[in-house]
Length: 128
Image (cartoon, rainbow, N blue to C red):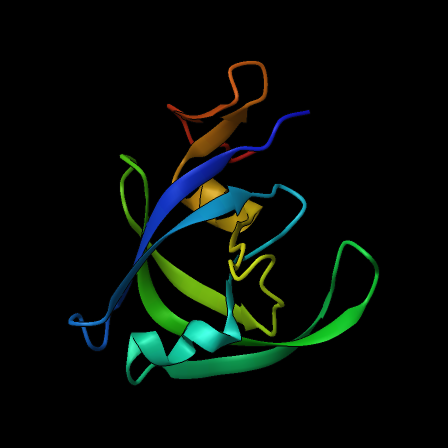
């Protein structure tokens, strides 16, 4: 399997002067848009919506902080409004690896094309 990364632009909707742009790993096993807690101050004054317990891929339990509202734009796709999950992360070689989870992908009507290793637009929203 290959890795798919995408450029993401996240804007604090309560203070639109604070915008963060980064590349993030598309992870359909993750639920949220996950950013390092070290970046939280880049969003200025952002509201904490709730604290949640998260289980990582290594089955470690970690505390997360869900904040918002934010506008999320993944590459050329339409933006969506949602939340960001901040977690304590360890940078690999000084670089953090944010994650784009399935909730944001579904909201933005984006699917993962594993054969083409790219993101594609979903024409219809599934209501079944």
